Length: 249
Image 1 (cartoon, rainbow, N blue to C red):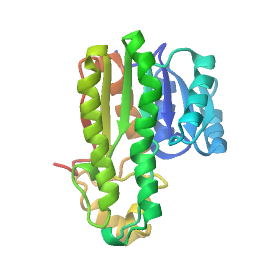
Image 2: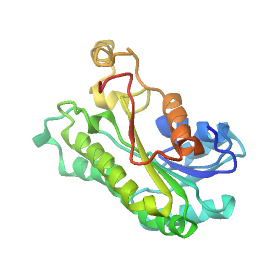
Image 3: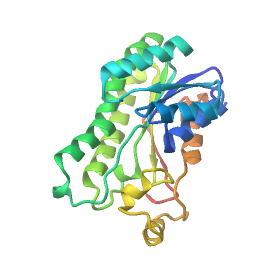
Image 4: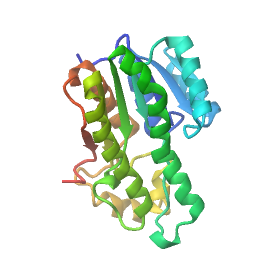
C-alpha cells in the first residue's frame, strides 16, 4: 500500500534540497510529478534526472496568477491533482529578533506562510468537488522546538504546524487529508544559512543536539512524504511528523 501508482502530485521548491528528494521519491513510487520552483532552470535539471514522470514548472509560489498558470499547465499534462506538497521555504541566518530587517521578515512570511494560503485557495475547490485530495506542508522542528536567533523563522514554521492541523479539521469532511513534516536541519542549501557559517565546529555543535547524530537528507524527507501521501496513511490527518533523529524528544 505504500506507493503512489496512478497519483499526480506537485512539489513546490523542488529545484533543490528536500523538494528534489520528495519529487524524486514520488516519481519512484509511481506518481506523475510537477517539479515547481522559482528557478525554472533548476526545476528543469531535476526533471532531467527524474525522467518522463516529471514536468518542470516555473512559478513564484506567493503569486496567485503565476501559481494558477502553473496549475493549469500541470492539469493539461497530468489531469486532476491528487497531492500538493507545499515545500518552498526560506530561512534566516542567526540574528537577534529585533535586528531582522523588514525585507527579510516579509520574505520569510511570504514564502513560508502566504504561499500555503495562495496555493490552498487555488487547489481546494477542485479537491472538494472530487471529494479527494492530500496536502503535505513542510514545516520544521523549529516550529516546535525553537532555536535562539531564529525567532521569526521559528514563528513561521509554528504557523505551518497550526495551519496544517486546522486545515485537516476543516477539510476532513471533504475527504481531504492534510499533514506536515518537521525535518531537522538537513544537507540542503539552507544548512549554512541556519548555522550562520558552514564550518566543522558549527556542524559539530549542531549535530550534538541530534541524538541519532546526523542531519536529515532529501531522501529521508522523500520516504516520509511518500508514506503520508499514500493510501497506507489513509486514516492519518492533522499530523506534524518529526523527521529529526530524535531532536525534539
